[in-house]
Length: 197
Ligand code: GTP
Ligand code: MG
Image 1 (cartoon, rainbow, N blue to C red):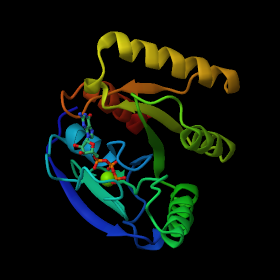
Image 2 (cartoon, rainbow, N blue to C red; image 1 turned 90 degrees about the horizontal axis):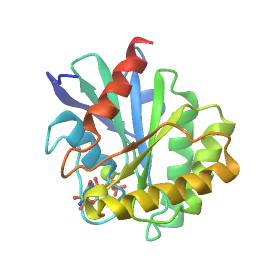
Image 3 (cartoon, rainbow, N blue to C red; image 1 turned 180 degrees about the vertical axis):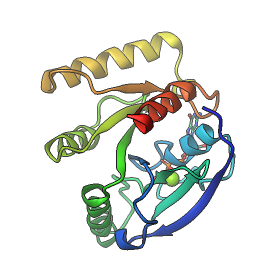
Image 4 (spheres, helix red, strand yellow; image 1 turned 120 degrees about the horizontal axis):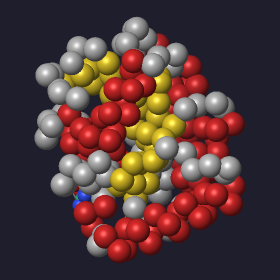
C-alpha cells in the first residue's frame, strides 16, 4: 500500500471527541514501551508522526492519525506501566475500555507483544477480554531485530504453544521490527484487505 499522506488529527481521553466515526479505523495497543508509536511511524514511513520514547508511559491519550485522507490509525496508551499512579491506571482502563467497546468504525485492534518475552499474563488476559467482548484483534510481535532468527523462532513457537492451550486457533499474527521495517507489507496488506471487505 502506498502512503500518500499521514497526518495527526486529534488527541483526547473522550470517545465523544474522537473524529466522526465515518472512516475505517485500526488501533494499536499493548504494554507500555512495546513499540506501538514506533510501529505507527514505521508503517506510515513518518519518523516523527507518533511520539516515541525510551521511557514507558509516553503515550497517554487516544491519538488519531489520518492516512491517505481515507482511514485512521490510532495510537493508544500502554497498559501495565507499574510506575503510573493507581488513578491514572484506573483512568486508562475506563477511557480505553470505552473507546474499544463503543467505537463503531474500529475494524481491528493490533495487540503488540514484545517478541523477546515469555507470554505475559497481562497480554493473555487482555486478548481473552477482547475475545469475550467480540472485538476483532490480531497480534504483532515487536522488536524482532533484537533476536536472532533462531531465538525468534523459539519464542514464537513457545508463544503459539501457550496460546493453543487456551485458544482453538492462533489469532492472526505479524512479526515486525520498527528498525528494519520487517512485517510492514504484511500489516499494511492486512489493513487493505479489511478496508475493502
Ligand atoms: P508507550 O507510549 O510508553 O506505551 O510506548 P510505545 O509502546 O508507544 O513504545 P515506543 O514506540 O515509544 O517505543 C519504546 C522504545 O522501544 C523506544 O526506545 C523505541 O525506539 C524502541 N523500539 C520500538 N520498536 C522497536 C523495534 O522494532 N526495534 C527496536 N530495536 N527498538 C524498538
Ligand atoms: Mg506510545
